[in-house]
Image 1 (cartoon, helix red, strand yellow):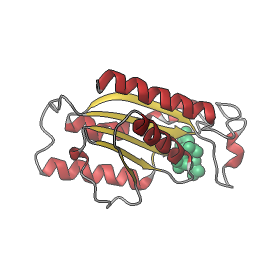
Image 2 (cartoon, protein in one colour):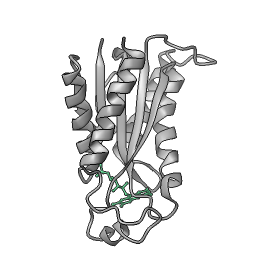
Image 3 (tube, protein in one colour):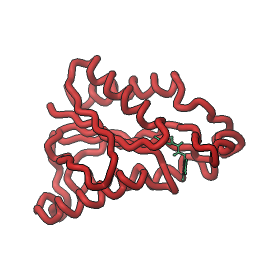
Image 4 (cartoon, helix red, strand yellow):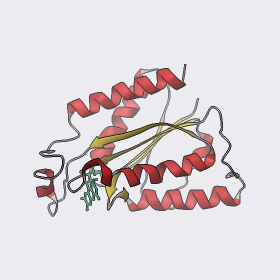
Length: 182
Ligand SMILES: Cc1cc2nc3c(=O)[nH]c(=O)nc-3n(C[C@H](O)[C@H](O)[C@H](O)COP(=O)(O)O)c2cc1C
């Protein structure tokens, strides 16, 4: 079983989630390759992996730019290589969990949904089964936007993702492994 834990994080929130995923996967007795996306040109062959966790913070309703560019480039590359076929036949043992951390100041989770759906489409096109779409609240950490962590659609989100949020992530990893990696 090859497991990839791929993430982009600009202010550290998604990295906390990715590290908790990594720790939980290891506690469950599996090896996992954790990769932080630093640029759209990054060299990663997601098709080598049977199980992928992919996550990002939400920026303007989409994943961070490096991860967005990486997914666009990979989709084009796999298309050219004939890995994306009409009707996207399922690869029976290939699974993906797509997640984001988001602040939701304006419209709550609705402004994070495009990011998760966007990331999921690369894997869906490749025939992976999307076995989780997770939304984790993440406070706004830049000086310019810090005040958005209070008074928005989700109320006071300072300190998120917090211990409870990360515990929930660990429980979801256990649940999804129980379902798909027996
Ligand atoms: C410049 C900027 C733009 C953001 N845009 C959105 C957005 O459109 N929707 C949203 O829900 N959250 C938005 N956020 C909140 C981030 O998605 C949230 O803080 C996330 O946890 C950051 O993840 P990271 O630290 O892993 O990069 C934005 C934050 C910043 C700093």
